Length: 121
Image (tube, rainbow, N blue to C red; front, top):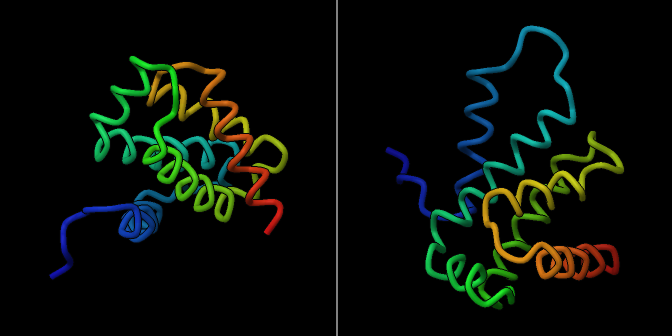
């Protein structure tokens, strides 16, 4: 029996299972798929880091623990949402702000740094 969902490492297995079960009959819209994936990833961050997210909302500074989770989720997202093309980064940013709230400029700056680190690899 598989363990219950506990951390982001398990998310992709759950996501793959949901895609198989609820795959649309026609061709999938890559933008919608990217939005759904981003929503899932940032919802998980919010779920497992409530205190850290609350701190971000209060202090308008992205805490290091949240930066780590955002970087990990962003990497997973970009690896899977390549069909969204140039819109992928803004999709993740939009969904992260919807789910986490807080200061949009601080979030944008953090995600820009995460994206730059990813590109430099």
